[in-house]
Amino acid sequence: MRPREGAEWVLSTDAFLENVHFLLRVHPPEVVGYKALARATSDLAAMGARPRYFLLSLALPPSCTGKWFDRFLEGMSRAARSFGLVLAGGDTTRNRLAAINLTVIGEVAPGQAVLRSGARPGNLICVSGILGEAELGLRLLQRGWDKRKKWKRLLRKHFYPEPRLALGEWLAKNGRATAMIDTSDGLSTDLAHLCEASGVGARVWANRIPQVAVPSAMRKLGLDPLKLALDGGEDYELLFTVSKRTSRRLPRVVRGIPVTVIGEITRERHILLMDDAGRTKALPAQGWDPFRIHQ
Amino acid sequence: MRPREGAEWVLSTDAFLENVHFLLRVHPPEVVGYKALARATSDLAAMGARPRYFLLSLALPPSCTGKWFDRFLEGMSRAARSFGLVLAGGDTTRNRLAAINLTVIGEVAPGQAVLRSGARPGNLICVSGILGEAELGLRLLQRGWDKRKKWKRLLRKHFYPEPRLALGEWLAKNGRATAMIDTSDGLSTDLAHLCEASGVGARVWANRIPQVAVPSAMRKLGLDPLKLALDGGEDYELLFTVSKRTSRRLPRVVRGIPVTVIGEITRERHILLMDDAGRTKALPAQGWDPFRIHQ
Image: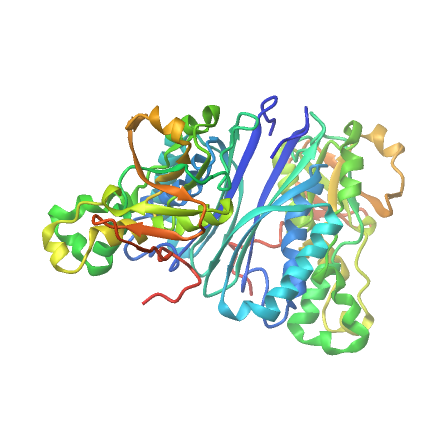
């Protein structure tokens, strides 16, 4: 590969494994192909980089050849075209379970890549889109509720997340964002990552968080929108910080994506959630963690 | 990452999977760590690139934490230092079986990367080192013969292969090699890859191939040195072609590694093996193929 003169490169590598990240029984092959690449590409968005190439390392069982494989490639091609990525190489082998690894390569203007470590006390915390939608889709699948026709559309964000590439680039330009991360593990966990890298704390206003709309039938069954928005993973939205001065000039919609201020960075290294009445409590990182035993 | 002015980048991604590429029961953790990185880095050697960075994607079961993991990292660190690689990022998750993926990034002077596709009729075919040593080690392991003390040293090449980085760089300089590949799958299979990419055929002289020395006790048990040298995988030697003119100036030892002329490239797209008596027969690609069912 021949890097563009003066450009900096951003690379990310990401495993997407059967029975850890997806289930062949419930996820259509197009979804597996699309999502494997979308997840990795979201890391480029979170640094403000423009996607260029990807490498695909593919280990598949015999059951994932033929028709399954054609549909898998269809989903991945769609993602590649949509994100502006070109397949530049890879590796193929067989395995008892499907094990996919993506490496994505993006470019960014010198010095403009946004890191996790730049958040400063007094910065405002912003998030793109709506939080908890992907988790809601996952819960529907887990409970078998996705069979109900009227709820099918609620699977969309879980199946086909959209890396916020245009927004990420916009935020990287001229240092608009001081720090950035994508919400792959969930707001509570990813905010903790960002704060740890920056050596700061945060205060989040619960009533400002753009929460998923949960049908009332599902609320009655125990799905709480705030809980989904705080701890639900895989939305692949951008969580970023801006200076107070920048926040005044920040549009509510950037490149078609809503942007919401949800809190502020603090010097005290605690992460707190403030409710409508102004009471605060600790906001524990309870998003996705592969090393925690899930109930 | 900030690429050096004018340099070109070479990237390779490589899966290293439990029960496909290694067995936790027989391969020490240091070997798993070292070999995972050595295999990937050999792809850089085969293009004449100088290693710079690597990305590690790691999915491990609980049994591969603690002591096992420390020893794994020890082996991988040793490989990284020895090859000049710096860990630049990665991904971690849990999985029922160990699934490791390496992405390596190297640099090469503009236009000097050696491809598989440059072999021309009349070029001579060369190979570095000795072929079949890694396969011999594997066979010892499979038969449990590695317990015999005097045969332990025969595992070395299977456990700790050495990417031929200095030789690869030397061959890339000034276009000394017209085409190159590493012998990861075995001579017969990798020569077929090179010939296919170049649109040519080859004639190999059996008695010129630098074959592994097989102890006579093992020969009696059915291990044939020529067969091991032709089809044995994982030597990670360099298989390359040079013009006749270059071959006259080619030392027998380059950067400490023996280099042997073993055949010539032909216009006819067959791959032939010629024996001592000058008889030729087809040389089928019978090296490692993950998609073939092994006996």
